[in-house]
Length: 397
Picture 1 (cartoon, rainbow, N blue to C red):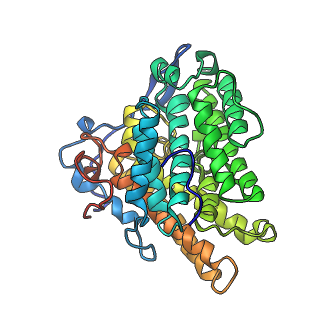
Picture 2: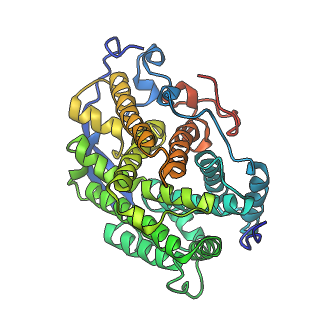
């Protein structure tokens, strides 16, 4: 048993023609309000009454070759530890919901994780990714920032956001000491990095940290692109895919797979064309699947144009339901490419890793369907409207 962690014990052609005009929409920041051009997100009230019958089931992204619903066997005990951790900080606003999402995504994406300690550590690492996204990009507000010790001067301006995230990542990587007095967010980053390093090795930890930095840099860059009104990432699907692969943290997920199994990719294999192709395709697939599953939260509610459905509506001029079909079809195309790569890896040193990548690809879809983070009683997707459903149980198709 590894040492316990110290940080806590239908048919496209018949889709209804719902028009989605472009509009000037306010984007709110702590330093004022700016206006940008984006697509008007779809909310349930804007759809015709029979749109549910025109939308494909979310589980249609679980295509042949992907595994059935799986969850890590340590999830119940890990949930107790996560609850204790939240209590340690006197139920700081949103920490509990981010911890639930972190545990949920780690349990679904890494169902074969080899120990309770690793599940707890990785769950908290995912928690911090969700938390930082919420603090700086998705739903920033002064009260929440103050609770985590983030100064308002670090927010609003994209360059300042990037610089502050760089500092947090340096604290996470154990390269610099937290500030004095130490803000809560720096305490969380320091402890998470410390325990991941203790349970892994320096080379993997360096790679994993670099993947987190890439994720944050891409988030800050796409945020700046929106705030400054350039929208260069949304001109076509190809440019959007490049941004989204990094923005979603696709490489982070794939390095987390190594940690989950305590089995690390040799450096000689990381630079091979096969591994680089696998990494790229998987990152795009994870981003596109997340776009479909998070559409209501991030585009309808948070007015975020960084979403495949929104980009496709802008580029293709199609109605909403038809665009959802297109987005799922595109996501499934990348999934099939990953399954093809699995066949190529048969009897190779990467065979087990590719198998675990496929588990993560499927787990990401299950997570997006069942987790409370993407559920809302007015979600455009019927599967995500029930707010009483257990996140540990997969709804029927």
